[in-house]
Length: 428
Image 1 (cartoon, rainbow, N blue to C red):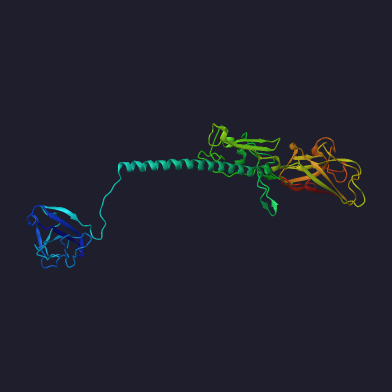
Image 2 (cartoon, helix red, strand yellow; image 1 turned 45 degrees about the vertical axis):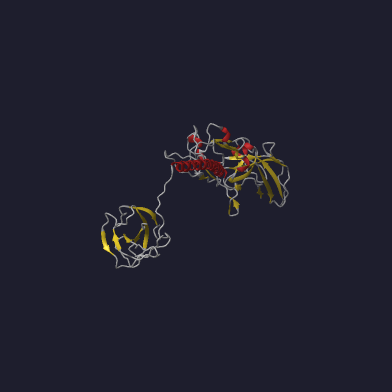
């Protein structure tokens, strides 16, 4: 029976890297035709093999140190009783499959994993692409909701910025007092459009007066913005848009917002068209972004102090007004008893070295805007005619000896929202 041929591939480090087993294609065992003998190796150390080689056992190649990977052939003798065959001849050949021999068994390269090349089938690639597309669609659906929520939140935040630009932030304090700032403080009115918060230009295109302090009253007045700081757009225009960056036909005035300021009620309302410009269902609206109480007060309590040690005042009933100056001596609002055009103080109502309180009212069209203001008590229709000529109340209303209020008569105070204010008027 023919014996198999075992070929060991030895590495340059002297260890077996691969063991091959060949069955003879023909019964006679002959030297492989076409092989080229390159080295006799009978003097080298024999390679231990078995009659039925175990692929897990590594042949010993120590002592064999070929320069390159080559095949070393151990040809056994015809001795079936010997388990470990002795070396009859040890030859070195170039690593080619012997002609006339069929490869029937191959060991795994020692110390190495099989070099198997694998790829994806068409079905696997289609399945992967389907899963990737499904995940991308789900991600888009999730991020679309997140993006819309972010734009909604940004729109609400910008509404709050607009509110603070108009009436300031009274929750903040400076030296223990509420911070008073904003367009309504400086201009004593609500902005007619968003544009007035960004640049000193009125809604009709005319210029807004800049900030200055009146010498006679010591009260500052005028535009000193911008009340909202924005970067110019590519065309150079200043716009304060909603979180969706919407624009409309009134873009130059309101930056894409729907804006309304009612001077009679003191209310500002603002609305964003949201994501869908044609569907009002997703509009974001604040119908009371600013209300009158945010920037106006409607009453002031005056404490009359009589420093006269002998006489109660006044000597007779008098009609008085509380005049609150907003800027110069011709810009003011007038308080009364909320029924008549003046508040009447009865004769001797203020005792000698005594004091008495009276509450003056201001209707919605005559309310006092927040900020630094001045005040004086004047005699109603003394003299009759121009209210600018009404004389100061100093215990009496003698229009012959008294004069209209001057810088010495006008007292300063600060108007803060939602607070009861009491001011002193001293009579010497």
